[in-house]
Image (tube, rainbow, N blue to C red; front, side):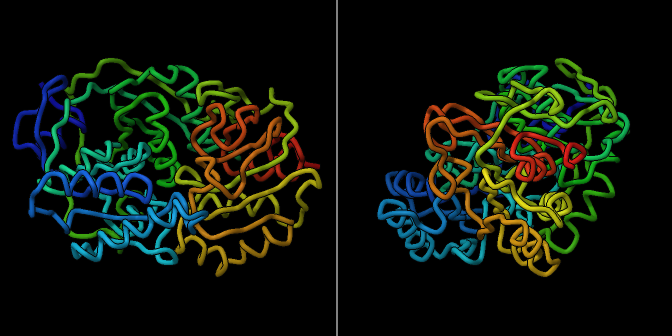
Length: 417
């Protein structure tokens, strides 16, 4: 019997005939930690009492509290900086040279088709958008990967997701993944892979694929993986490090279930509090907002910034709304300035900052007060996710976020006057 993409990659990296349900020990191509998960991993590595270290496979990216918001976060950043210097870890991205970890992993060419990548952050599954098997791990596991370059995995079952058609105007990857999670629930893909296929894939921009893979974890998924194609090759050309070997499923691969979606039938969606599975069409959402947030590892790429800027150009942010625009990386920030996007947002009355995860995780820069509501292009809307436990977060794509900032309530661009 043939193999799924996940089974193909785990077989290659473990040197075994990996099949769903088996336990394998596999070589990881890269292991990533951020300023929150890294310090724990550094301490655990020290407790291993070994001098073995796979430096070339380690990537250290401060992003959650960047720039530092207080003494505690400054100490975390200092610990990461010191660890990188002490051990000669070259893949360290200092403030001002990096950005949100998952976008950096792609921009800097660590993520690539067919690779096995782990990261001490749950949204490491993002890189499945370019045909990698990537998944989140704990800090203790990261320490072991530092020392051995390997980790054990239970080979996951795979759900086949067949896509047909193409997105309509103002619809994208965020709308698709909210629809999928709403249909199957936040545990509908628990420890499974969502493997995307079908004619519709070729009609999806890679930025949309990355947004979909990013939120596979919100359905409990171990990974969300797209096939390699011409668009993937073009997207990573000039940035990918080293050689890579794309992985494709066999025609007779075994799947635990199949989902089917026609992209032309997907509407602009919004996930109501307090779960990503509470999706509804935006046309059914009449919700006044206090804040709109465009950014994050889900929708902070240049394509998202362009989409948002196109909506707000020549318009003004609603007087009752705070509109925060946060590019995912310094590179995206620079592109925004070069293309005049930052000026468009500023002219509209938005707050534009450098890259940080701060507001997304409720750390700082955009905290919600009790009773406040935000529409956000981020990936989670749990209770208290972006502020007070009595605040509310509504998840949506970049165009809906931008339109809502103008309208003062959740809206699509077509709803603007």
